[in-house]
Image (cartoon, rainbow, N blue to C red):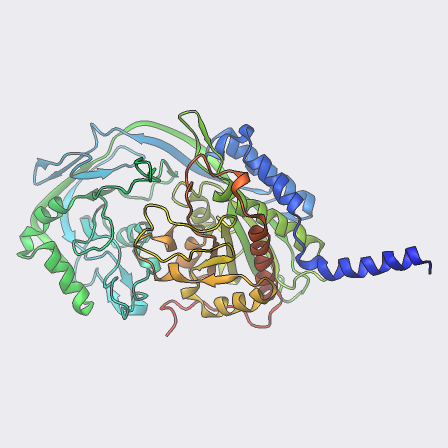
Length: 525
């Protein structure tokens, strides 16, 4: 063997040893530059830019060697409706007395309906059998409008069964809506709990350092379905009026529930509410999740699935400025594409199958991931875990909403948040073991948060609702979040590469492990 051949062989050995978790910064940069380009115009859901992003990711999945997972296609399409409410014709009346839109109530619904019905107070609107708690015990909500508190009981009590001072899957508005529908309700009124420590729905919004109001992220689009019911947010004063019939104040009712976790639900006798929704403009269209499959190598285990996910959509163009969303969430999208390449070239291939999903319409109330969880392309009962990557390329720093809510270290260049492992200590343990390959500092602080609602804000959440272990790898909020200055040049590429490697080793350990993570409905003991 010549000296040149020997050097080449030695280099090949080194390359092979490095290959499993080798991340290409060149790939990351190239993919980011395209997704954040003017041509894609901020990738807003239901726009040509978002469609182009989805097709680009699908092409990269095909080039990597993934199989199409959606009936011969890489695109799982789903119906959306984009709409603007007609505020002048959207009305709420209590016993015939109209309330003012914007100051006493708010709400939007994609169809024009009028619901006139008696009202029942249903506490927090939660049915949680694992905690022995049900706000619907002793009341009949069929054909009624339910009035409920936002959030969850005892949320400032570290000893609460509802994850202490954190949140559980029951506090999300969609979870409460589906529970109300199961109990036969025809409408829902939501009021911020009166003894709250967080900002309520009608409280002033925080502002940025230069005095601008923080951009609202209320949904402009929803899944186009006919099974939902209208829901309005109402002010503290409106709730006081409705609940006066009980002989107790809203604060007293909340204190009673929080005191011993016994529901205070009851019909509001002789009280009738009319909810009328109106639409100024509606556009029906489609969005898509991009899904590619790498089939497992083990004949007995390949029917089981590990999901690696992100979302590709962002906020589009407003006032002539492109919201490029480099960190939110082009960073996660390119990470999933790179992970697809890494695993496709990997030998031996993982024993369990890997499903790579880049969701559409996350910015529209997690529409893509909720749709997938309700229409899975591989059974959820054989889905062993979800590793979701979103906002993984920046260093965490305070935004107006987070000040005084969470503690953020001075240096977060090596820190990553894990969100959702409260529901699976097994998954958390696997991530900690996988982190030996990367040395990141891992924090679970957002699993103890009830102010920022972080548990509910990303695509891992619909899987938790369905009892699948799921984690969000989250670099944290930062100045420029949901602003035009979220650009590629601000990303921390060494950190981004580390997070990709952590996702690789986490997914590999789940895919090849003898035991897989378990979902614990009530959380750890």
